[in-house]
Length: 528
Image (cartoon, rainbow, N blue to C red):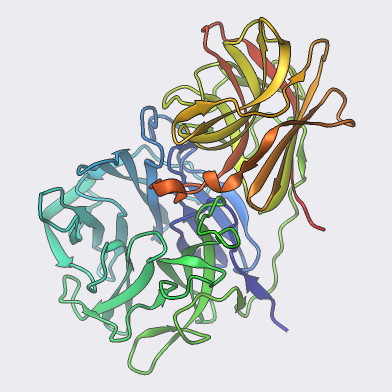
């Protein structure tokens, strides 16, 4: 009996999947936005079991995120392969609010999926969601949506096509609009492939929220005209708000070694009874079938994504389980961690200054778009626990360190160790709610004389409770129970694209770079 693919296959903040097979290996790239290193590449050999394999954008020369807005940075990376070379195309979004979008599209290449990845080649700035198509005749073509800021115009100004010259390392010829979409709003995320003489274009339409969809069009010539599937859309949950996988869209196709077809796509799982998704947009996989007249359909029928999908006819290939606890006993930060906008360099993050500990030098506040000292990982489960232990001796209220549940600078929760004139060393909760700072009512715990401070966050569906302890055994609540729904894309009209990350951080607003030492970081799913 074949295994089942259980969706989502990539849990937690993992949107905009681009899937690729090279030989017996499958790869999915996902967007990382303002988090560094840029672009997550996941690996599988059976489409069932996945592991985070690598990040291709590890140098500031490839990706400079300082000053990028929250939910800016890396949008919709697209992975492809041709004649021994891997190609990665990505957008770095420098501004995203208002009528204008400041967009920069780049290409990097590598001889193997794990690199080394090249310095970037600048392509264009006309829109986002670029994709590189390798045609049978050896020519290469860049597609992206075109942004139109003019008054009275559709902001999504069509999908443009332009040739890329590997010899000249730039786009050549004129850019041409080849389709303006199926009629649904927001045509983006073009993915082009060829089959039985047709050029097929898979689009993300309807916007990346609850009206999201995947649509398919085809043409006998590369530059169109493209006809849309008469039963479009191919995939959507727009009319099914109770479905377990919502926001389905932004698809990418792959064919297995035996000729089966599968589609990766983004999805989201709201909190029960609330249209809020603090885990962010995730990645799912569906099995596909071709009709006799050359259109794709979900293998189970209909347009709704399935939670369980028949796996391909491939040998099972599970990966070793990641340990729950990181003791910081490696030479480099674990692949599960991200930093905000800047790389993890020795001037602020060290695993060698005190072996077996993570040392963070305090930098800017949790509101900064430039130099924060934070190392965080995705929240991947609705019921989870995160725990750490910190040694930190703050001298005044401008110095703090601790455990954060972070969406962005406007919305986050912070269990912090600090110092003030009245309380001395203490542990309390601070938060930002839609950009407004607060220290909510609830227990504040004195920590004078505590050499070690244990910190914990317990997440139970839409609630977060923080706790602290002097010994890791006797725990005390800190602050009130908080609403995890606040850390969602849609919360109170927020237009964000990421999800909740949980991390370790340190601040020194006096500029003296007071450091905090973290002994371990434990993350585990809570299973009854």
